Image (tube, rainbow, N blue to C red; front, side):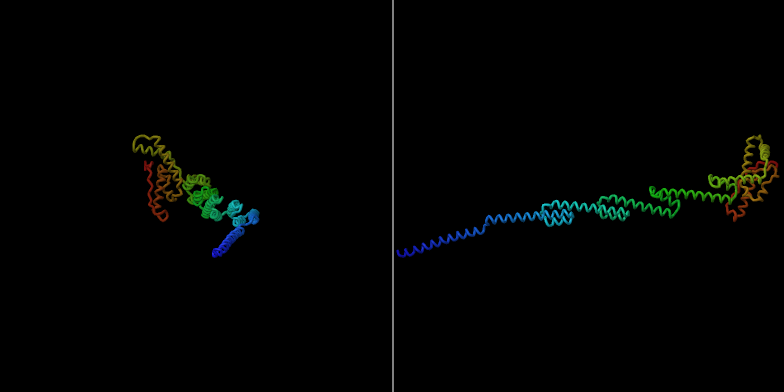
Length: 358
């Protein structure tokens, strides 16, 4: 029993100790809880600090935006975006950058075009297209290059034509550049060259006619250059030669010759003489005389003396002409060094119309 009494104080002490331990634990827990949770004043201070920070950030954002707008450059708006990637004006800053870049591109385009226009060369327009292939003036630049290429080719072709200075060269220019810058002048040059060529041909033909000096030569000139510069003089020379020729060619009474010839034919052939026969004879005689007058310069004096004899019975211009032409052509064959190697053909002998009594 005594042992039990001794054990009771020990148990009471242990219980008391345990109670004190529990209280201590509870008190410690309470103290730790009180230390870990801020007080109301601490919460208010934190919120105020957060609001102050937000206000500061907002004010910095607005100031940065105001500065960017004041500067108004791509660099300023880009710096704003870099410093305030989540700022209130990010979208607007991006739009401003796009607008400024577009404006700068357009300004550069216009300046480049103005410079190309000022230079006005194909190289300048080509450089514009290379730098601004999609620019506002790209199509116009290509058109200018094409125009300059055509103009360059036009001017070169004209320079070549002027250098050549021939009708063929100017004609080729007008054919290749019918709408060229020098077409009117090319046509004027052609007209002048044609006129000069006609004049040169006229003068040469006249010089040749004068050198020959025959009625045939002057007649040929008049036929070829009916409105030439020497036509009037050619006709005067022809008239003078005709007058001189008629004086040089003895006169024959062709009426008498033809009547006698027609009578002789009747005697030989029978029948009767008709006026038509006589007229045909007169026509042949007159043509033969005209031919002798025309070609008299081609007959030698000896041949004219031998052939044109009025003392023959019933002389005939037809027979005179036949004789003159045969003698002249025989001389040509005898002197090839003077008249050429030939071949020569003797003229056809005209039918005699006054063989009666010979």
